[in-house]
Length: 289
Image (cartoon, rainbow, N blue to C red; front, side):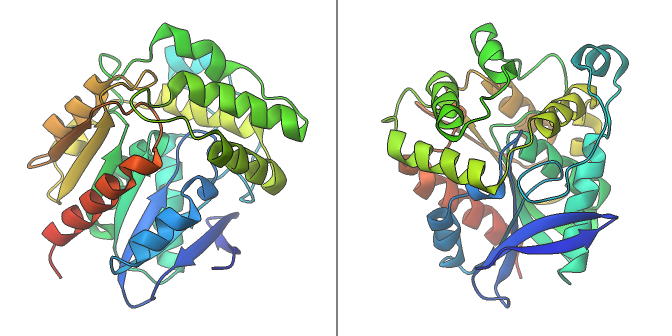
């Protein structure tokens, strides 16, 4: 369980693995501005205990992966579908990491933007994806999955540059977008924030991620062509990606299972971990050997 760097398509991706190399490969993809450590160690260890070889990584422009360049304009991204790099390149990063690790195909699970990346990965590189679990994500259609206006300001504000200030900022964000049906775990989230700060923040990279999301097209036609086991998990109380996004995703993928979790917002409370892990394992099981 040691962080390593892998050269993929001209950039370095920081990754870490859990479990037996001979177990079922599972690639975990985190969302907007989130580092791979937001897939918490214990969560990954529990997946490894379910016969998975777990791979988590920092997306480009996040954590210890390569920080790129390019100005992002959210207005241009939305109106002109223009961004420093497209979401599809982030999907290609994931495919390249699997190839570099000599993993022909993997089960994949992604959260929020990570779900979008996993959807694009399955569409663009179908031979690399054995099953798909899309968590609190959406299809890219601008008619579904829209955020509640109250959360936008907290998501667009620049984070403080000092360690404690960043932690307080992240806590405020998750009080806004988190799960009202479950206890707010301040010590766990503070520890996550401090670990992220120590690994390295990249506010400009998060803005480029958001540009890529806004510029992306509707993946619904591609999702309709998928022929893999798929599970869509979404919080019934998600204020950042409205549950309509999860419902549309499940409707688009043939045979997909939809699991709407009561009380869950745009986070993954520990109380929901068993449901998430069971779902990932159940969906992988549908793929066979």
